[in-house]
Image (tube, rainbow, N blue to C red; front, side):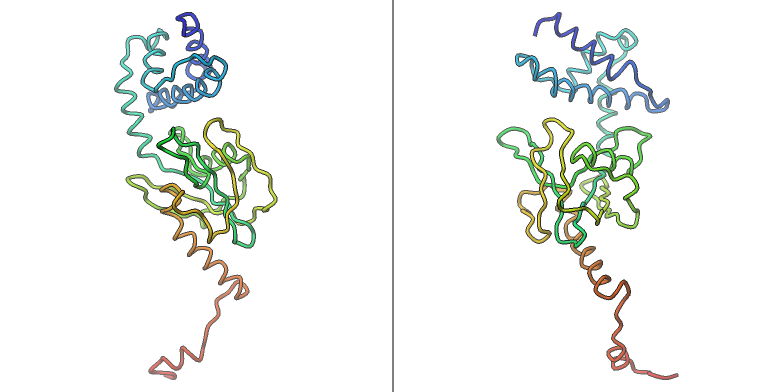
Length: 254
């Protein structure tokens, strides 16, 4: 990459993601590095496809170059901000959606791209991480689901249908949606993230090919489905076997 082209690309990325952006006053450093992280994805998705000879960049490299080019940042050190951003993202919860057919027999999964030959893509729920300090879990779920599978969850998310689990040191919130048409067409708005979008029978998911978030939530999901099916079979209520209760009781009358 020639120096002239390099400067042109980084100035464009600065304009798109850094300069003309609103920041949270208390956490502007985290938001700044997050925007630079987004610019890295844009670089990979668009510039590297247009110019095949462009080198791969890391977050550290792209931040260093932007700090050097943009005068208001020139006197600051990016290293501390990157570490602060990394700690912040590691603590941020993962938020995603569990889409089920109305009969609760199928679940929608996405296959990630992976990272080279050694690290293959894994199946999992559409999900992501909170992008800013101002974003809440529900907004994150709506955004990530729309980006990954092109499905709008606005007005369809209920707190009572949320599965919460701790994965490593981070909590993950997966919101269950039960009225999805199995003939619904899905598409991804992402680049280089999602290989495939597919329905699976809930009891025939390729468990050895799923990611950790899915594995942690799968048993709870099966229990949730079992509970919902039992309520449906009982007309929405609970079936009580009075004979069994009375026979096991030592005192029938006061």
